[in-house]
Length: 303
Image 1: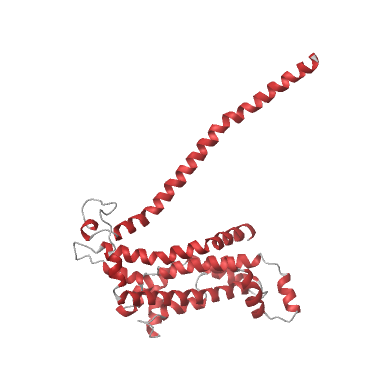
Image 2: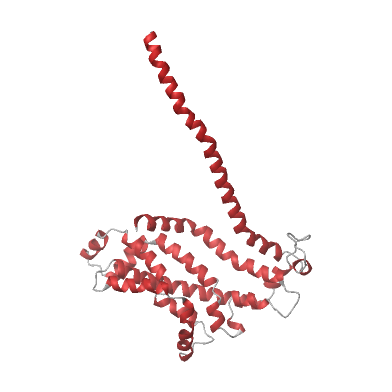
């Protein structure tokens, strides 16, 4: 029994020595977790501050919004700016213009991007890799460099003061980033699907529409979100081509509320219109965020 005790003491001592680093490392892990949560909380508050300022300003009076001192929250919140927007029929026209331009732009870009991604990922044809590399190389071209040639082209086509310059380019696969994202997703799908469908007599159009696109719902949902945000918030292109007030979209209408010649600006009205314009974006992201994260995870791990 003594021999057993002599052998068990060194073992117990070794266990205590092994347990000490664990106890020493636990406070470090707790401090690291607290620091991580602190950074995440600070970043979240910094990102949410513009939204808080936009909402609080929309509820202020004109005197509070233009006061020289900072008014973080109005003494008596009011909805006068929101009522002014809802009672003005012109804002309904701006809203209809934005919905029309965004819906057709997103639809056309989705169809064309999906078709090109299928062609460069599922069909074997000579020069496919070269064409795909040329597509990716367009990412290095700043969009500002094509503004003047595009304006000359659309002017000669008679498209100024129409929605065509905003909608039509999307139907010609505008967006190499989305083509790349969708191609990576399509490459993860098994080739046996195409071969089985071809044995049954299906052509590429049938395979693309009835087999591949339903399997690409997560990637298509995330692309739809990105396209919707870009089209809904588009300012530069509509500002160049839409010069009639009746054709204005919401971003241009909000920008026109600001008059640098005036000392007092209608900040409550500007912020109320901004809040109402932001709501569709927030709702769309809340309902589709699961597809966005799923698409990014799948393309990142398997692409």
